[in-house]
Length: 115
Length: 113
Image (cartoon, rainbow over all chains, first blue to last red; front, side, top):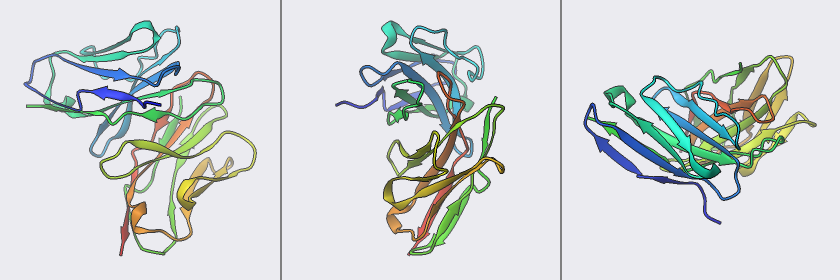
């Protein structure tokens, strides 16, 4: 079946603009993660959704970042008033979310460049 | 809270030589451990995982990892690497259940012909 789909694959925006990044998880996966991959920083956890539970937002770097997940499926990561340090690859992953920790399935990411 | 330390940011190794990529973790509870691999211009994919049972875990492409609770380590090994193993490898930890997965900063394995 289809994997995790992210759009757009590349986004170039001017400093100060808002951007929205979209993630379509694998159908039936209850857990959804957003990570940020920057050079030398590895995978930085941003936010985690599990079913209908309140999301774990502990990784969001500032209040300019927010995310929502509608209907337990599609998720949107929004960055307001973008800064150059926001430039990175934003990765979305989903999993079945069961207690055996089924593996994360990653999308190909959105490469964000803030000029 | 949990954390993952990958001690080597880059590891060059000659083709057909053995390799070990180091990973140490910290957690106040029992953990599940993972290695993911990212080949050039591709997304991350699971290499292997430790949930419970035997401490030696075998994964895809001839890789294996050993869970050592006393040393809080989960090092990744391969007895003979190939050019196609050139990639970035990420160690990850989760406390289990409905919890977030924390990744290390990654180790770039460069296999030299």
